Amino acid sequence: QNIGNRVTRSDDVKKEPQGGSIFKIRTTVFFFIYGFLVLFVFIGFLVWRLRRSKFQARNSKMHFENICQELDGSEDPVPESMKDAPINDKIDYLPYKRNYEIAKENLEKGPVLGHGMFGVVKKGYLKMADPKTEEEEKMKLEVAVKSVKNTYALDQISMLAAELRLMCAIGKFPNVLALVGAVTSELRKGHLLIVTEYIDRGDLLEYVRKHRHLFEDHLVPDKTEPGSYLTPLSAKRKTYDFKIEEGEKENAISQNLDSLTTSDLLSFGLQIANGMQYLSTIPLVHRDLALRNVLLKKNKTIRIADFGLARKYDDKTYYKQSSKDVPVPIRWMSPEAVHNMKFTQQSDVWSFGICLYELFTLGGLPYPTIENEDIYVYIQSGRRCLQPDHCHVELYDLMKLCWNAKPELRPTFTHIVEYFVEHMKKSAEHVYDYVEDMLRVEAESQRKLDDWIKVNRCEAFEVDLKSV
Ligand SMILES: Nc1ncnc2c1ncn2[C@@H]1O[C@H](COP(=O)(O)OP(=O)(O)OP(=O)(O)O)[C@@H](O)[C@H]1O
Image 1 (cartoon, rainbow, N blue to C red):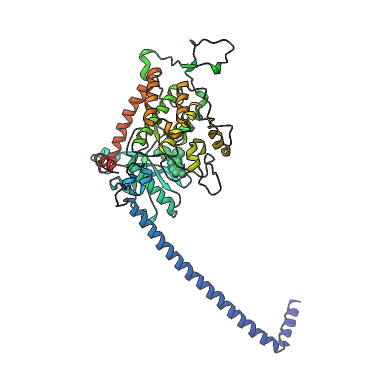
Image 2 (image 1 turned 45 degrees about the horizontal axis):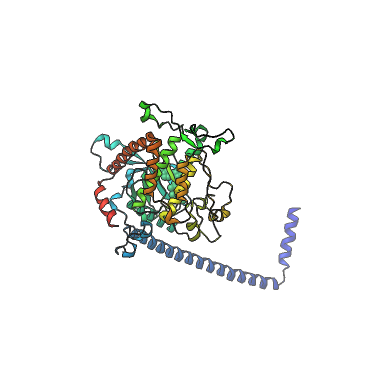
């Protein structure tokens, strides 16, 4: 049957009229022209792509070149009008100190510690730049290494470079995250690494939240206060009862990380105030002071971190006032900062008051019953966070001072540290002694970080800081 069909088809072909071949020629010519056009467009597209990627490469090379130049800071002197301005405003003039440079081969990268919106922080191990002994050759320092997720995101690399220059100017202080060094040698290829101290216990907010069920409250209702049985317990004045024997004072803060007591909260509060006081003398405005940006070490000392210009835009904590705006940490912000987006030392003081609230509520959300969009109206009407249960009234008084509607009437960080120290010397001297001792140890360990990079740059750095 198949053979039969084939015969029939070939017969049809033989019988085809002449008009059919004209049609065939036309079709061939049409396809030829059409194919030629397609080929022409395709080649045009390839040429356009090639030229565009060449242009982009030249453009990003130029941008990377700019970022490299910016690393050295502007050659112009800081204008007289900006002399006393916070270093955040003078970022263009801040240089990256080249003696912070780490040889890439001395740095080994480890597991991811955490992500920001654009950045990623990994654990790292740094070899000594100039080992003198065999033992030193084998030694490795645990560090944290920050980089951007997308090496082609020029604006993010530029922000990371700015963060590096800011960290160079900040220097070292026990309650502030210290820069160990940086790898900038491959910046032209989009690779920039900031290497800082490794802080082993994550952020303080998570720590207090995770340990709130173990909390040991040493703030008890004042037994000497006269009151009737009609006075509710919550309305009674509370005082500390640390139950520490004379000889046990030095162990009064447990280094066991599976514990959380009133002494710990006081110690964290004092340390944050101490770190902020140092930053305010530089002067640097943090702009995002919150427990989530404070890191904890296993000896229960803390480091204020996250001076970056990039923010965690995807985090619910950051609120967009309108679709055009940059998301901001509205619950931590003073009213004037919300109103005009102007961040100052006084707005940092407000945020410090909120940090105390977070501490003494064991990681509670500020204004828990108020929606983001209603916070500004709420604080403008004079209302504030309520006194946390675990907070001594003198510390709540300090919080209220930090939340004064008038920025100029808020205490400075120097006043805050004095207030804290006085409160602790009176009521919790063991905590004060502990913090003082630990900070001495931490200052020493930060000084030793310089040994991991070739040059001992402490002196040079101090001279530079004064001239900024
Ligand atoms: N020095 C450090 N030691 C240990 N862990 C760290 C260190 N720095 C950051 N981390 C961890 O990495 C997480 C992300 O860090 P960080 O918030 O600085 O990232 P980021 O990229 O700067 O984010 P963004 O700039 O968008 O705020 C932190 O929450 C913390 O858990």
